[in-house]
Length: 545
Image (cartoon, rainbow, N blue to C red; front, side, top):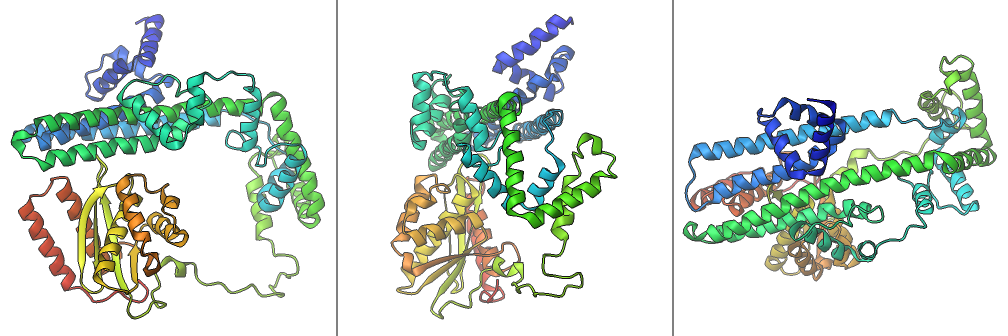
């Protein structure tokens, strides 16, 4: 194969998604031509290959699910092949993403940028708050945005990029994508997957927003799978064909959403590379250096003792360091550690002087402490389980008074599923116990924080970052009507506690029932087993669980 043919093949794979995906899957299955395998090794295809495999991964799992729910019983051998293929695609996808990350790390290692003076780096690391304040003052005096000038994440990098692109006229569709609210933007991403590809999403002005909201759009794809799966399971096997076709469509759309979400990440990475180049070369690089140098002078004036220690330590170090000619590029961390470990002013080497204030052990706040609750409080633990293929989720709960419950819903994340479980448990217990306070414990920090914030503010919208789907939002609105009777606290999970283990077992059972992976008779037996195990437990929740 000539060099020209090799180059043309690489270009074809870069431009033709279907051809790239077919080649990647052929290589995975060991039936790839040598020239194709050689082309796929090209560095420029490492990212696109992860996009192709993200798409193939969803389709492979969809094929398994259709076979499992088919109206006609599938031969065991066919199911085994489909499941083995899905596992292979998932493993290959993981390997490709790891390879891309490694390649990306190597490319970053090769990038050079001016090395700040050793004094500046040590001061910034040893006294981060004081140096940051000096830098903020310098930026403010220059009329620049606050933030550490470090490409590409900082406000200064964005400012520099905006200055460079200020004269660019945005097409009207790009302005619409930039200016619409978040819900409308997610709807645009869903249309991009389900109807027609939007050529304006990769534009620099909106690509970061595309990447931020790609996960939400993908969650709505999994929501559609969950709804379609629920419809399939709700009807008799003999009349499932039409609804199985709808499930196929949902998997096809979600595969596109997965691929486009991955593509957005790659395009943002490429944009940040260009932003990095913008602020590390030419006049912007000079501006960054001036800001840092002047900030160091401000730091020296504001913190003379700290500056004297930094200056004295770096001078001693540079006198003997073999890397001194290169600016000691890797020495600042160790030097900053020396300064951080030095005794504070007013304390002699023997430790005499002012005694530090005693603090509680760090682990105290990690557990749900119940000593402050009234004796009438009803305490329960809630847990949840989520599936891989769709947004189907299960939840379960168990209370100190022996009551339990479980059910299923749709959730975009484990955090949202946990919120659903907490709300369902609390609402059930509120109905059972008139006027008694209800306390729910949960091992999800995200869920506890979301509900606690909503309860304190009496505003369900503050939890919408966690709660994407209508099911959870409706439950939260119902719970807030009783907010003065409800508390939620964090509980360390999976430590063998009776209530927690029971809630977890019910959540997993609920998910299996919802996905049709356990017959009704077996589910009833499992429910009896869990209840029997719960009844033989160690007793009520301890004071510090």
